[in-house]
Every structure is written in C-alpha cells, then in structure tokens.
Amino acid sequence: MAASTARGAQALDRLRSGPNHRLEIRSDPAKGRGIFAREPLAAGTLIEAAPVIIVPTEQCALLDRTILHDYYFHWDGDPEGEGRGAVALGLIALCNHSRRPNARVRRNPARETLDLMALAPIAEGDEVTIDYNCPLWFQPQD
Image (cartoon, rainbow, N blue to C red; front, top):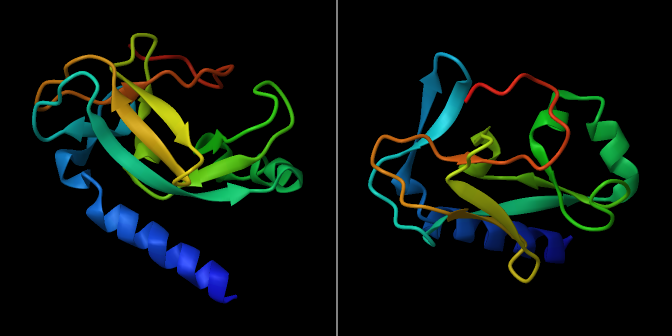
C-alpha cells in the first residue's frame, strides 16, 4: 500500500510540474473536444509528460467494453494484440487523431509517462494532433 501511495504521489508531482500551461482544452466543431497550443511550440518540444496507470493485459478486455476504450494507450507487448494498456492522467488523452499529425506519443517506461512530443512547429492556437496508429472506429475529420 505504501509503495502504491508513493507512486501516486510521484505521478501527481510529475503532473503538477509538467508543461500543461502550454495547452488548453477547446472544442472543434468537426472533432469535438481537443487540445490546443497556448503558445508556439518548436519541433522536438516535450509538450506534456502524462503520468499513466498501467493496466494489466487481462484487464484491457474489460476496458474495451467501456468508454475508456477510446482513451487508453497500448503500453507494451504485441502492438496488434496482447499487451498492457496505459490510462493517461493528463491532457494527452484528449488529443484528436490526424492523418497529418503535428505531435506524437512516446512511451517512457523509466518515468511511467506518455510523452507528447512536437513533430513540427505548432503555432499558438493550433490543435495538437497525433496519429492513433490503430484501426479507426470513426471517420477522420482532417
């Protein structure tokens, strides 16, 4: 229990110290809720280091039957099959998909974070998008 509490406190500290002030949640008429840059972001910038809750492989099938199916990330194992999941505890979970993304998600097992990295310069006010890298369950809007 103490180890779990310590990990939770570390995750909260990382969330508080992360660069979330760079982002804001807004609504796009075509895509719904998404995240947008509040300031210009250079290519290669770490936009957010989102702490994660690691979901055991056997519990991912349970998540797949909930609304969280649309919001959790593949953490490890076979990218097309079995593996653990990761529920992001930051704004990264609200990134919309794009076939031409301006950011990417990188797993950081050492810190237990999902790191959102700018692939290209992102202007203030632009939506931060990623490629979901999986079969889509919706029609892309870009």
